[in-house]
Image (cartoon, rainbow, N blue to C red):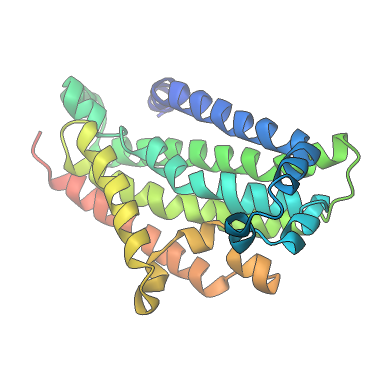
Length: 253
């Protein structure tokens, strides 16, 4: 079991640290430049096309640190890559073993149940760690930079971030089990993300658009976590993990 965990860590460390660098880069492009961003937007005041989407009242609110960092980080930059993080951490888990022909070697030494549980668990740990780091960056930066910040919103956004990544992680695990190369699981996951996002624009299908959840719209609008959607994600994710195991257990190698 220990060897299996060590192997999975080695397999995912490049993806993990590469994604972490992207998250940190995005944050430090955004957070220290509040005044620059606001002044740049103020330069466009008077342009009817700009004011149609960004009224002056919104620009004034962006001068408030809480509003600026929450909307631009949780409600925009970080929130938009949450599903991508889940997909990136899951798509090669099994497909790479099939593609490289190493899955047969693993099955000689370990049971399918152990292989599946170790891979899924380690990928999940990596996903949660990335989301946790990204989710607490506003609190850490605000403390160091001595910004006045409402820290109570962080746990709420973290719930949306973690479970928003979880649903796409577990979905991508299924694609990784199904396909024998790494390209197809990645493209299938991204394609499904695009499809559900587009379908979610239809009012009756808006629940399919997970971005409304990952961006924390219920927190911005009602200052509370969307409990029903969160429970739905937990149930679906458990089903996806179980379904992925059934496929892996029966798949011919």
